[in-house]
Length: 244
Image (cartoon, rainbow, N blue to C red; front, side):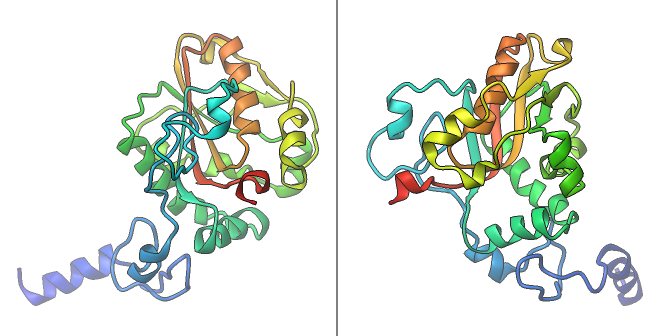
C-alpha cells in the first residue's frame, strides 16, 4: 500500500478533533470507547470477585454478599456492572445525566455491551429502566434508553414502551438504604405482557446502588410472565450503610 492510499484511508477512517470523554485530550487513534489509553488505564473497572447474584464486589471467600446471603428476593436472576461508581466514570455519568451530554451514552454503552458478551448473557429483549413522565420532561431524555445503543447495533431487540413507571416517587439518590427499598413499591407496570412473556429479559440502567429500581422492574416483569430477568448497569455503587 503506497503512502497516498494510506493517507487517504487514515483521513476517512479517523476523524480529527475527536477528544477523550474523560480528560478532553485529542485522540490520535481510533477508540470505540472514545477514551485515551491513560484514562482507560485508571477507570475503576469492576474486575475482582463479585457476588454471584447481584454483582456487588466482595473481599471474602464467600460466594454471595451479606444482603444476598439473607435471601432477599430481588426479582432478577443476575446483575453485573462494568465499573465502580467513582472517579472519571462517575464524572462521565454526571456529564451525561445532568449536563445533557447525550453523546457520552453512545460510547459508554460499549462498555456495557462488553459485560453482556463477557458474561454470555442470552437475552430475547432489552428494556431500559423507565422514567416517570414528570422526570422525563424535566431531564428531556432517559439515559437508560441512550445506554442501549450498542446493544441495538449488536442486533438485540430494544423495547422502550412495554414497561412504564406509573408512580411519581422520591429521588432514590436522596434516600437512605431502608427507604430506597420501599420508595419504588408498585411504581412500575408492564403494559404489554406479550413483549416479555416466556422471554429472557435484560434490564439496562446506569447505576446499581441498592438495586431497588431494577428489583421493582424485575418483579413486574416476572409477574407478567418473563422467564428470566438479568440486569446490566454501567456502574455498581456501594450504599453508605454498607461502605461505612
